[in-house]
Image (cartoon, rainbow, N blue to C red; front, side, top):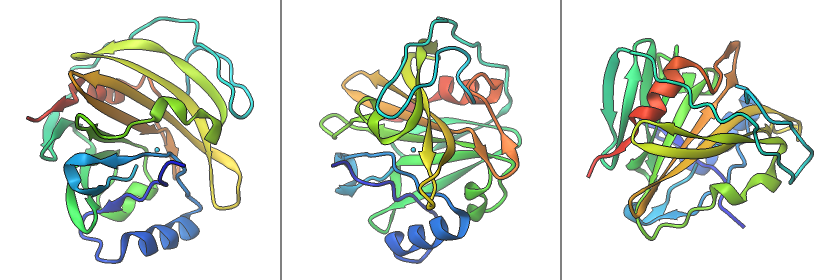
Length: 225
């Protein structure tokens, strides 16, 4: 069974497991996206709009999106955030947040959130969570559909330097309700892999998979080394 997501914002000093439990209970947000070991960190690297086409289905099933339209990145302005092994654009109005893995800041994972000002805001703002999987690291994003509901495949899209596959779905909260919408993309970067999870709706704010800033972020993702 794949590992549960246990992403911890930088500057949070609590044990990652305890921290996630407290925040999940407080904010009704439990992420069940399964990820495997990231070899580059020497430990567990934990991970998680609407689709414009395709039909949602029940648990474990998926449908293929009918449209094959690749949205174009906007001329979004901003700065590039580099975690060490992966980098991406942080558009104006968004903020990048590093994550801890095994008590240390991860070089493979970070997130970019719209309207967030502080680390705790990642639980109440939509965002894009980016993870780099070095060669040899376990990877299983495309095999996790049975964990979710209302799964719909996204059309393969060329964004930036890579061609991305993905799907949208609903994940569960702590009440076992499938109410957390997200999209997940993955691509090959040579012998490595990159994953981008788009948290489509958190708090009172929403984004979509066609949001120009979201597309620009994904199109800008590159390995750093």
